[in-house]
Amino acid sequence: MNDAIKPATKQIEVQIMGQSYLLTCPSGGESALLDAVERVDTAMCRIRDTGKVKARDRIAVLASLNLAFELSQKDSQLLRLNTQCDDALAGDGGHKTLPPSEAAVAAPTIALDAVTQARLDDLARRLDLVLGSDGQLL
Image (spheres, rainbow, N blue to C red):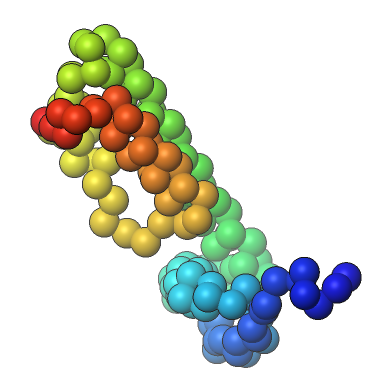
């Protein structure tokens, strides 16, 4: 592959559960990678600290499953919110709002992965298009 086409990458040394790893990420992606490393390290240390599981590979599998489950839950929640938003906008001339309990969920308070952030950006773009010059969501 030609170096001019190949995206620039950077190697970062990190610690996960006390063990060093040399990871590669795209330039500019260091912060996202470090956030992911922190989540994995926290999940693995939490499992290790329970004292019920000792083997590093089993801890890694359990932590991976826990994180995948959390991501799946967030994806399902986002899909529900997208559907509710689509239904609300279609059902009342584009001016219906979500109930406060659901609107609060729509405002994330955690760092989001790139796919989730892209979905939220798309939703915001769609809302801007529907709202047009009114600009009033609530």
